[in-house]
Length: 137
Ligand SMILES: [Fe+2]
Ligand SMILES: [Fe+2]
Image (cartoon, rainbow, N blue to C red; front, side, top):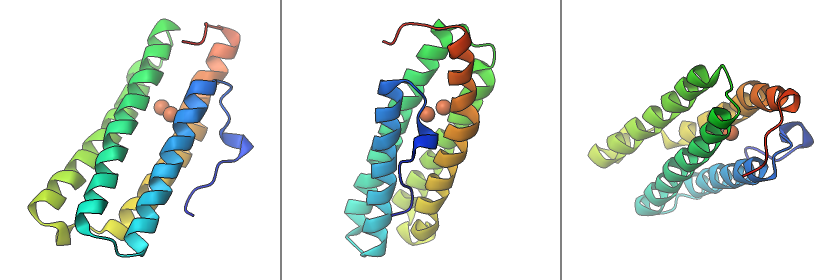
């Protein structure tokens, strides 16, 4: 298992926490699939899910930030967009030539990105709304 849920990841928002857990599960499933050498089509499917689900999650966070008039929303959006474009690049590369994608490194890259992003960027927002509370969606 590459990334495990711990209390330090709790944002205080039940929906966002559930989405983060789903992303952790998806990264771990991707890693397990890569390690066990499943079919390339299965790897692509898992990558597709990660791509779609992370975008759904980012949209949800950005909506909360917009509603809270979070001043650092544009910077946070850039962080999200950079991950989306990296995943898009990996997907496109796989479609062109799957042997070009170092899948072993992709799962750990995603796990590290998620850990750092949640602890640094997401927490910054959830600390902010503790001072300026909004209703949960
Ligand atoms: Fe997040
Ligand atoms: Fe985020």
